[in-house]
Length: 561
Image (tube, rainbow, N blue to C red; front, side, top):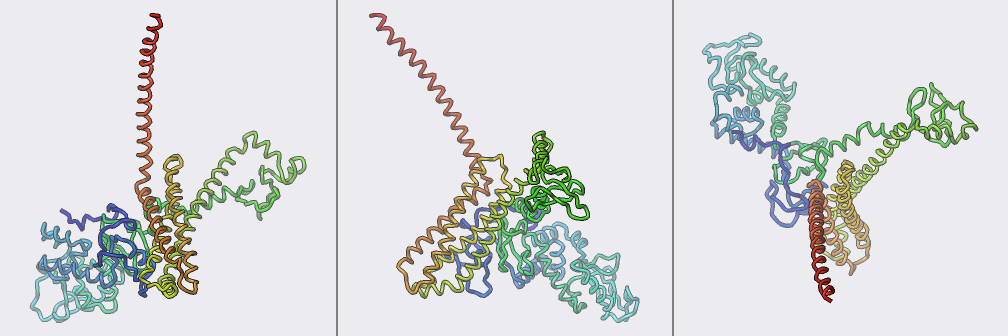
């Protein structure tokens, strides 16, 4: 049976509850459970680390190079002790089974002989030891004393020079050197890092780098940070939070797809949105919506002046009417003038341009719709970057300045940092909601209305918070002394932070649930309406019977009279 480590797959992991908006488990590093750590004044602290420290739940660890080496050596030692083999053999086993300690144990105890044969760890040498004073190298066929003929577990004799050349060439070929085998073509004995350390020189560092990186790249629960030039790795805990992780290098990304952090929007939507932003399809849509093909050479032409007289670029130089695409020599006063074309109007009424106009109108509407969402997506990204810079300035300059002017300890001004952190996170969420809105089907009117309502409420709350921390704070920073209104500002900013957090909590939960509340509400409304109609119908029939009885009883006294 495969172990839990082996069965772990990042693409099959289920996302848990909210990380930024709800409580959860501790981070991999030992830390106190209490107030968030706002120690951002350290030199290596950055924007993403600030955001990560603000979150109440972290389902990942950021690993430095020394952390990776420590984890790697711990795993090697564990396997070596449990299986009673050397550390070199343990490292060969772990590399073969993608650094899964559990799988190594399972496979080894299930069939040790098969594993040894597959991996290349031989119990006894293929070539028995020789008592000769000289041995012949299997590559250069020169004779050497036994001490100059090193070998691996198989015992095949090769001289030091040939071993060095073989190992050096393989290392220079790439990471495949980690699965190095005996030079003998018929032998599958593995070559461990002890031989590399003994015989390689300049390439030894390159081999060690491959060896270290394999621990991350072959491990299903670890990934390198995708930021350019970053050497940190992320150890992810499955099923205990969202996919969004923040590296110490200032880059936040999605563990599942390694794109920029995009919660609450799913990875497929982000992939389509990024592809659309970079695809040539939008260029074609713009060309179709804002240009017309030359009737002769078919090249697209944009109309940039008022006159309908168009001249194609050389070598075509064809002159035509922009409206009807007819030859310009056939136009003049008889066609309605140079700024009009009654031929076009007549042809349009006859339906000759219906399909062309329809396509152009569809392309224009599609382009306008995409532009609407993209501009807001990009605008929130810009605002987020500005907020991150403002947060950096606040924690390095403004807090100290405000503390001096308002005679308030910096420890009591953390509500300002909390507001900035909330703004940064909300800008990120709001940015991706526009990508979500673009792909929300038009025919689902109830969902779209509910989405736009939640998005509008969240955006309105965010703008109020952003304005308060950006503009209202400035008057206290520029004040000459303590202000009696500062406590009111503290209450106002803390309240706006809390309210904005609630707005975005509702928005995030709704989008992650696929706006399912709309469907359940519609079903309940339909059921309620149906029940109400049935009840009203029964009530109406009851009233009819009662009236007949009342009518009959009222007529009887009259008849007797």
